Length: 132
Image 1 (cartoon, rainbow, N blue to C red):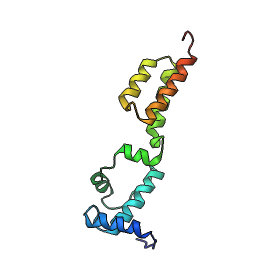
Image 2: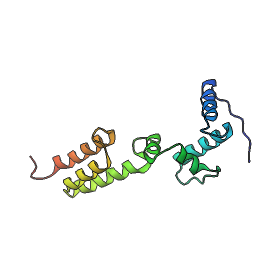
Image 3: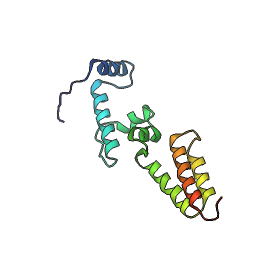
Image 4: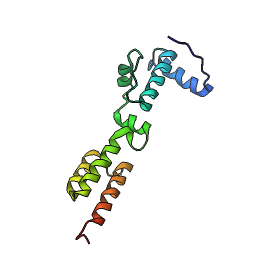
């Protein structure tokens, strides 16, 4: 295993020390290894994780797919993009109720993604023939 020295601001080190003292991580090294691997999985979902107990630590930290998606940005890595594709397909086919059900099933009404999907669906409704 390679050794690398990295400098962090004092405030960051203090936060990490607190996590270790609280038992969230066994050591600073475990925190740093987990953090690096986690970021690599955000960047590349096919990244081959080598950190011992990575999934167990992730589970203990209760990092959900939604949290993971928020870390990646608006499209959540793929789910939001998949949702856009689903709403678009339904909108192009005139299946507005199916698109609404999909949105309502997967999103809270106040979620930013929900609002965007509803706006997208609205563009298909407005462009549909025989619509007021």
